[in-house]
Length: 470
Image 1 (tube, rainbow, N blue to C red):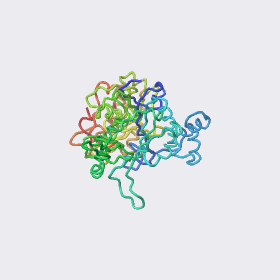
Image 2 (cartoon, rainbow, N blue to C red):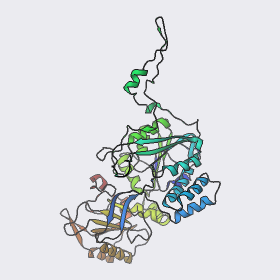
Image 3 (spheres, rainbow, N blue to C red):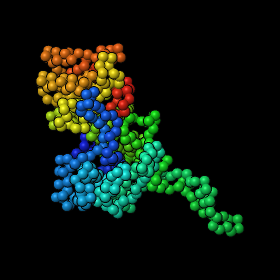
Image 4 (tube, rainbow, N blue to C red):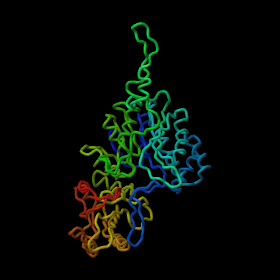
């Protein structure tokens, strides 16, 4: 366990390796199971396979069934009773799949937290009721401290419901009464009427001596469990990074200030675009960030912590470590390799993917082709000409403007070059580009990217900034 380090991969795998009682504060903003599909929906011109760049939709599948069976046969697990009870309510559903996923990880977080530590679980009303039952089961009902409401403006106006304008943040202590909590940094000014009425209360006056009592704290009122003075990150805000679930820096600063001290260790096991990490760095806390998305890890290193050398675990650092990843974690390698391509995002589904491992969109439609779709396929094993031909067939079928065939090592055979050349070129912005590119991962470590036209950011839909192509 290394402080001030990013970890790429499933937080469950990493947390299992770390020692007991090693973390002072945990903040997590996990997927909510809100059935919200964020951002871009890619589809071929022919109406073929669809792809969502980011989603938090959950389904009952083999993995969920396996997790449930483990809890069913393990009455000693902290979350056993909660999982069994919720199975009676939700059945074998996407909600139960989500909650068993969270149960495994929350058990590890409880183990990692120090006796004086606290955990803040950020969620929305879709799953907060189930998550609270899990937290009661794992952390203990007696250690529940607050259900914080983060109230914000800007939500839509549904015709048949009240507007939803809040998130929930569940706060638990490892041991109630021992947790660190300093309300002073979160105090807000009193209302003018309160100041006028209670600013100085005269209890007794004897002669020339004033025995009056100061009823109000000079630093402001004690923070309550509704946060209404911090708004979501505006689309035009300087801190906006384009990550779909980005939280405002001020919200994380407030949480860290009241529940941690300088040099404490803060863990964010679903660190996303790294708001908690930036807050920890700014407030002189040590931190650890984990995310299963290599896009998120790259975003933190490239934009959030720009100019800093951030150690990263789980990401290939050279060709040999990439080769090892391809051999031992082929799906993780596919996702990582796709995100090396500017403007591409990996599939959320990596089995029966139709011969496509990633998709992107050109920022501008070619002058001579009626599509902006870009496809990528990754081959971590030995190159085969038949595999390349199959991918070219997929690109033709889906009417993709361009494709990128990614391999571990360079491919320079005359037959491969002929296949690529046979697909021709497209013209974008007055320049010609090959419709099909061969790109080895080894080039990435030498600082060479494939020659592509301008792409859109797969997580914002906006043309990518020039810095993203360096």
